Length: 351
Image (cartoon, rainbow, N blue to C red; front, side, top):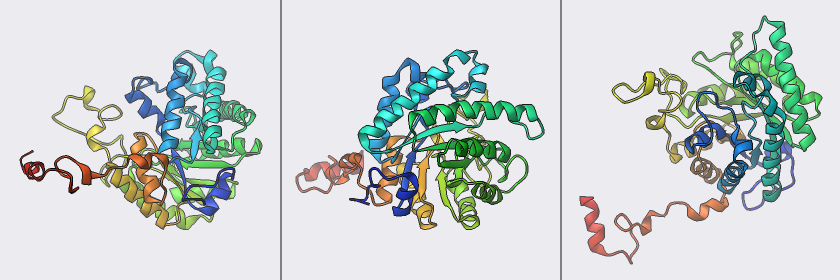
């Protein structure tokens, strides 16, 4: 490390051997909030419609401390594009997303990652679904390999079988694989395997990094994270959503917020605001995860650059965005700086 920053030019495993690797995810939610992605379908058409917006979000996350620039191809696979009737944009979307991520990774010295995800067509007993999943992954991983990615992230996978197909596809392309599982209400895979056992199988099948992302917030991910860390010897990933999940509501799908104006009374995905973790909670999560020797750390759906900066600082970094980290000593009312008028400090009690 140099000045607390992951070494430029080093590969994923080399950087992990030196210390934490921070990965900003959550592009879907952040760009939906900004008005560039449609909630519901959640297809990243913004890559083609407004590439400048995606490029800037990559830069914002790197500025805040992300070591990884992940191509925005989540839900950019063939099966998802079939749902919206736009299979013809499949290859242009993926190639553009990879080009944007590669550009920003190159200018910042960050790791450049490809991305594949849950297809929502996999069924354990349906061999035809396995064929469709494999074909979708092979297309995306092939384009990622051609673009020169450092590694591929396969994320938000609830079926162990689908995760193993993703891993096999990535390894056949000769690339390191980060495989992160989505943990639903019950802490197990759809087939019934426990999360630690699933991670153990993925490690044995050749994953470079295994772990969890999405669905669960810090409070409901940490207990499982400790179990996963004990179950495997490879590096472990933890990318929770920044929401205040609980044992009773372990995932962000499970929240309710009665008495407020919410369509269909469904909080997920567009009325999660009251449940959002603040930056200090995400920093505490990062400290606790790293204390377990979990080194691949980030934030998934709901992440903002302020969360990433807080994690980076909690792990001993000073990214460029730290220049603008809070300094309440200079606040006009709550500050302690001698140059602030005493009368205004006194007025703070009446604000």
